[in-house]
Length: 195
Image (cartoon, rainbow, N blue to C red; front, top):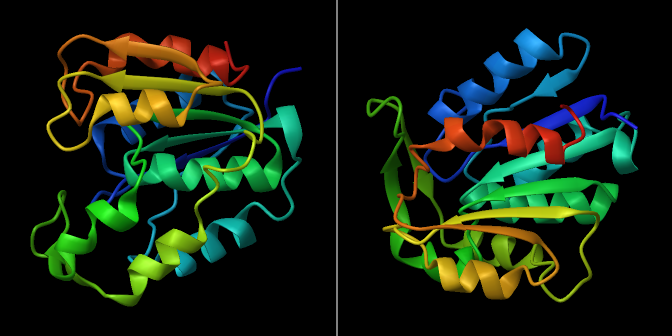
């Protein structure tokens, strides 16, 4: 059964203007005009971010009619969403332990795509991240992991260990941004039952 709803979740300091989010949006608009696609701007608070998403998908069909793609911190969020919606997830260089990794980023931050746009990453956000951890639960649905060995921010080996049930694509080289994501777009959408 083809998916009818697709959610894309961007990473820390990122936005719906990320190259990967735009590639997905453009391909969906071109090839799947009837699909409902949503890529929200996520607030810095993990609790608020997932409350926004939960509200936005509340009326969506769950299970195989829905899929979620998440990049970096969005991958961590995508696993939580998939556990709630029992849906397929695609994880692009996902954050595995963001509570640990983002602790050093507490304070004022700027957006990647608009350096003039600033926000505060607050100490309480670490506990909010921990509350969203579903790593001890079985996957909510089929998972595709795309992990670049050349990721300069996150360790691909942790990703592989975290997602043992996933279909795994471990890429030699590459980078955290998955600059060659266009080469993996068709597989990503096919996994989401869109191709």
